[in-house]
Image 1 (cartoon, rainbow, N blue to C red):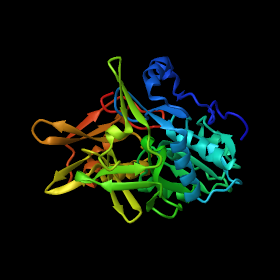
Image 2 (tube, helix red, strand yellow; image 1 turned 180 degrees about the vertical axis):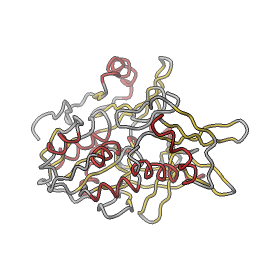
Image 3 (spheres, rainbow, N blue to C red; image 1 turned 60 degrees about the horizontal axis):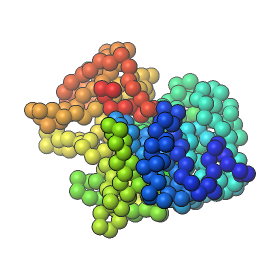
Length: 361
């Protein structure tokens, strides 16, 4: 590709802030605070997480390219592949696509405006793209079939339910399960084929499973530093300060690893005991998500685990009014787990990638 692509210049020495317009007023303050760290060839990104406050990462070009190169090798991509860019470049999911295409010199289709019917026509020549579950659901709900040239649709950003994947495959969408983090410049582990539900750790990453199944990561693609802006105060922490003595970054996620087969179990604290058995929120969310796809109510209900003075933790089901009548059936589906509380909300606050923001918003 010739010259800067989508305002991203991989050869620029000065750090580049890539952000949504809502954060642009913060850019001078953040750049000034990060100046002492000499961040040459770095990108400053804001996290796409679901919690409050402003959080972000400085990632180096070398780290970004390390992940991009590993991802290209994982999917055995060549210079003849065509990428459809379907996610914002101010998120790691979009920026990483630019890096992957840049390394191989791939043709890149700009497909960032989301209208399912228009988008599916825009990407007719693409062989690979990456989207989030809410986008995949839109395609499934409308019965849109995949273009013939498409080999991979990498679905990340949030939990992909079993039912949603099944329905997408019926329409020819070659869905790839993946798990990634901004902290490692996108993909940590991915399936290799649409038929597989087993996601494999990319070889540039090493992981350990700590206490309470906490995920610890050591990687060539690890971020350089993290910043958090709260009450007009910017706190900067280097990656090494967030790592253990062996250089493993202590994430807020839980996981299992068998050989190179990786399984994400959810966030720390997203598990609780019922009748003596440990229940994982990802399992409950998969059950709920599959049910909602079947009933054409995707995104209308959400589980959340919250603190409770008496029990320690309680399971809350948030529902929009149009899905309220399905509450009892959901309770039956997840038995013996019990829904402690049902809350009806007029709407859900979501990130621009479709993730649910912390309730209440």
